Amino acid sequence: MMSLDWQVFRALNSLAGRWPPFDGLVQFLMNDYALTTALTVLLVALWFRGRTAQEREADQATVVYAIMALLLASAVVKGMNLLFFRQRPFTAHDGVTLLFYYPSDSSLPSNSAIVAFVFAASLYRRSLPLGIGAYALAMLLGLARIVGGVHYPLDIAAGAALGMGFVALVWRIRPICNPVVRAVRALADRLLLA
Amino acid sequence: MKFVSAYIALGYLAFATVTVLGLLQVLAAWVPLRGLAFADYRRPAWRALGPALIVAAYAWFFGTRREIISPGPAGAELMVLFSGAVFAGVVLTLGAASALRPYRVRIGLVGLRVKSRRLSGAVPAEILRMADHDGRAPGILVLADPALMPAARALAAQLAASGYVAFLPSWPRGALGCAAAKALAAAALEALAALPDVDGADLAVVGHGLGGDLALALGNAVLRPVRAVVALAPLHMAPCLRPGMGLLHEMTYAEAWAWNLGGRRAPLVRSLAAAGDAAASPVLVLLGQADSLVPPAGSAGLQTQKHERRVIPGATHITLATSCDTLAVLLAWLARARAGEPQVAAVEVRQ
Image (cartoon, rainbow over all chains, first blue to last red; front, side, top):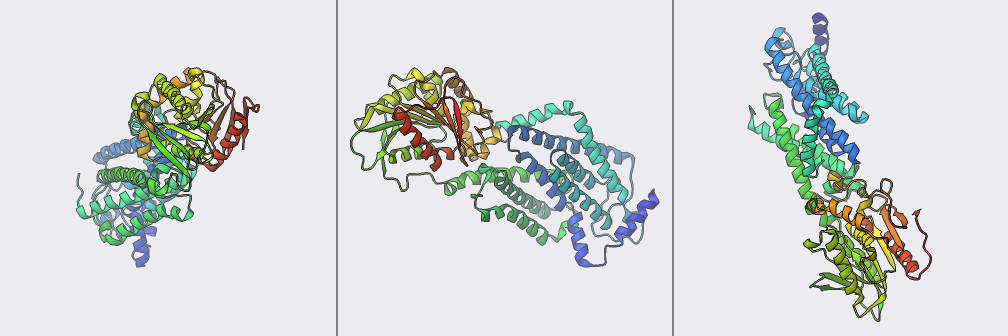
């Protein structure tokens, strides 16, 4: 498994460092700001896009579930990282082309992938076009971070699985989460924004 | 919290804020949400504003900050910065859209040969009549929605230009109860009938929004016979009296706060609907096809009165009072009703 992980990483990372415009594109896609902001903006769009009160209620609940899934996933991953640490590919191997700075936290799972896939999975539950767009952005982010040398494919896959898994979990335990949804929407309603 | 680089953090805050501004303009044009709109998005050229803001934000941030691939704010810090950007973006959008509204939508008496006079005293009101008005004319009481006076004033001006003497009472703060509102309307009708240039036997009532509910509720509260009652988008037909963000489909954030009447609107609409007597006069209900507050498809029927109901194509809750189509339907129907022609009862006529 680890050998396959390394081989796929090598194949993708070998694309980096050959052509500066391509490296620039990968840096644009892999950084902490570009695609994460785009995905978060899509979630903001979900809050506002509803044309009827029923649509807004369902859309806004989805946004709150997404934030809850993200907080839950972040807490669990923090705990996991205390027990398990995987070195970054550029630390563990020679000859890795790195297009980014030297992150010092655990490589597995990818925090960026968790955030991206939490948002994508949440958007997909309410809107097929938004969901597909968000999944495309999330996959681009994951791929760019492998090409750029900061994650193994398994890190991204684990992050994606955890992100989607926590969204599924939160939707499964919706009755427990709904008081939070109601409280957030009640606050927004007072501001005429629900 | 470690933002690492203030240069990147502040740059990101500005970038994300402008991106949110752009997103909200995209939504304002696409949903549409008039309360968020900086421009009139019925004009296709303006629809590029939102995408242009987003592209400009990305181009500026990633074009000027080569340090994006060096350590900077991440994780929780990014979440804090983005939350701040959403807050700033939403506040800026709501404020700017409210401030720009007068430049986007102009409601006035431009081009109409109408003169107006203000009355103070027991019934503060405005009287509008044709500038070259001579002799006695039919009188029409225009009951505005307290938060939508400009729209009702435009309607009153159009009616005045069509030969009516229009009487537009203001809603004093104390009139936001059912009995007080009905008393205000009854007193306004008496004041209208007492005007020397008004034919006291030829009176009609038209109301918009909450004014429409009041017009329908008047019934026997007025002593004088009224030849016709017209309600434009009466709110008791709305599926929801607390539309929340739904108000932003119709009006700016500042107008939405005023529309809410400090939470007193819903009880007043309910009490007016409950207190309404069946009017002896024929009743016309006009609904806007694009009205998101009283949508024709989702609106409840009038339960106590036989009425004729028409849907005005393309009209929203506010533009229903200012639409030329509304005026044409209203004037033709009023002419028939005042002539005593038999009205069609309890039918729906869709245009």
